[in-house]
Amino acid sequence: MINNKNILAIIPARGGSKGVPRKNIREIAGKPLIAWTIEVAKKSKYIDRVVLSSEDSEIIEIASAYGCDVPFVRPSHLAQDDTSSMDMVFHALNELPDYDYVILLQPTSPLRNVEDIDGCIDAMLALDAPSCVSVTEPEKSPYWMYSLQGNCRMKPLIPQESTASRRQDLKKVYALNGAIYVAKVDWLVNTKTFLNDETTAFIMPKSRSYDIDTEEDFLLCDLLMHKMGRK
Image 1 (tube, helix red, strand yellow):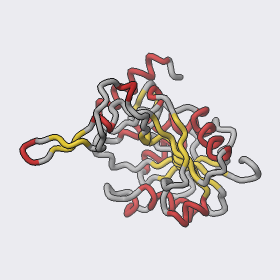
Image 2 (cartoon, rainbow, N blue to C red):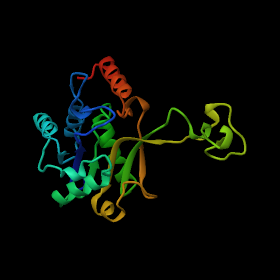
Image 3 (spheres, rainbow, N blue to C red):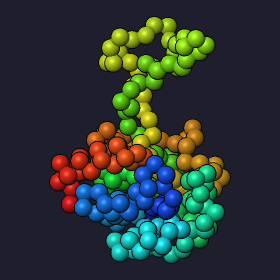
Image 4 (tube, rainbow, N blue to C red):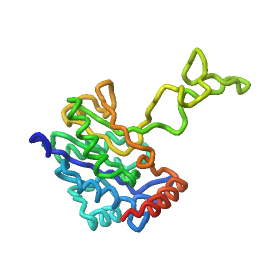
């Protein structure tokens, strides 16, 4: 709770992952992937309740074993490949009304820490913003990206008068890293999105911004977490 407002954390984890099958409960650095997000969320000084949204009985069992609250089972029609994250969030909010803020913590970001979570909440409140999301500087700047036209002719993705030859000369840009999304519930219900012109950013380092989407991502994060001695 913060400023007498209560905060609900939702951890989404469906069973039908395609890129990395069963990735949410696959072991990484000695624990199921989802356990890292559950444990760090439970350390937050602001979050009042950490809940799982899943349709999968095995995921539910493992999440419960790590102390995550499972007050409902997500309907199967909201656990399909084309189900939007917002549909899942609104289902959870309908099941659990009366929260002032909601924070979405995807289990595919195992390197985020509690300082990131609480820092994102602090950043939103400090700027009196209705929403805040985590971002990081991308490895490749979009100012050096191109689309291909006919005959493979290159067209700059972002038109510029001249192309910088050094990265230091490029304008700083940030990309969503998928680790943290937080918003006022009433604002979110009206906007139907965590992202619009009122949304503020919380900048995270690349070292904690890995988002597991492929086997290569999984292996890299496992290596990094072992190297860091994550316990």
